[in-house]
Amino acid sequence: MSEADTFLSHLIELRQRLVRAMAVVLVFVLCLLPWAREIYAVLAQPMLEAMPKGGQMIATDVIGPFLVPLKVTLLVGFVAALPYVLYQAWAFVAPGLYANEKRLVLPLVITSFLLFLVGMAFAYFFVFPVIFKFMSSVAPEGVAWMTDIDKYFSFVLTSFIAFGVTFEVPVVVIVLVRAEVVSIEKLKEARPYVIVGAFVIAAIFTPPDVISQFLLAVPLCLLYELGIFVSRFFKGNPAAEPGTEVEPQ
Image 1 (spheres, rainbow, N blue to C red):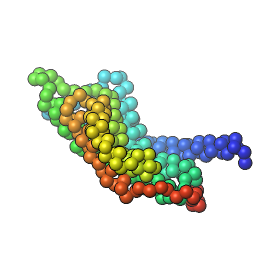
Image 2: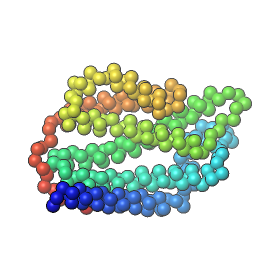
Image 3: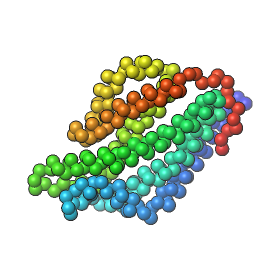
Image 4: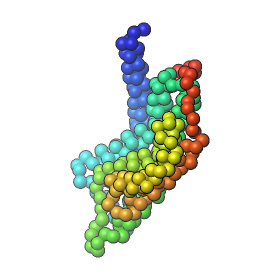
């Protein structure tokens, strides 16, 4: 088989796996769609609980009450289907990996997914209540503190991504050490820069208050230290011989 035919076959396989992944996401979204309003109510709960008694969110867009719950349902459907999406990505790249790489990559993919969920849960159950209660407490007297549901969804989505990616730091550190891109000693030397970078990132992806920035920067630094500790157990080169496992379907 020529290189052009091989490349074309890879493109065809990639398209097939993308179609499968998108189909599963669509199935989850369609199944969840009847409960779109309830799902949004759960997402909005931290904000509603922090508002003064009788407070509520508003919709400034005519079709906002329809579109925002739909967006939330799309987000939940994608997260629910993410294990299958990651499996399809794994199945596509697995044939080109060495045996040791296969044994390492699959656990890392699973761990990455779980850590991303933990990051989202940390933001929802811990960060949001703290931030919203603080914002409610500093609102001037006589000011009705409300927010548009679309802006609230954008804030939540940004926070979920920021905290989800933050909780991936240990995986990134392990991969860098395992691939010998950087040594553990260099990672330790970079601690001061990581701390400064953590607060810079927190300032970009969180509201302009000290509390929310602190709640993102501190876990990032702690997870960096966790990655350094765990990476001690993953040092070494992968085997240089290709694996013989059967390609996943």
